Image (cartoon, rainbow, N blue to C red; front, side, top):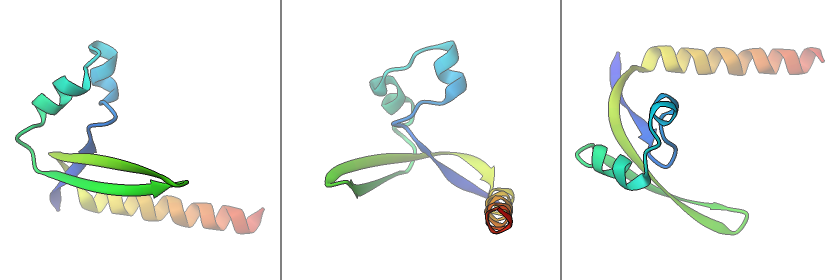
Length: 81
């Protein structure tokens, strides 16, 4: 199943930053037509606002499977230690 996934524009794509240093303004212009989600997080008493732009497709089944696999392996390794 292919679904739109989120890219946090606060952190630039690593391949993009290696080839060209993009400013936040350039990234916002590049992704301005994509659906946006805004979330607020309170961390150690400081409020952070994260703007996420949905820009591409990713196989959500593979992503969830990988997350579940790594989580299970970490739990097993922690119990064995």
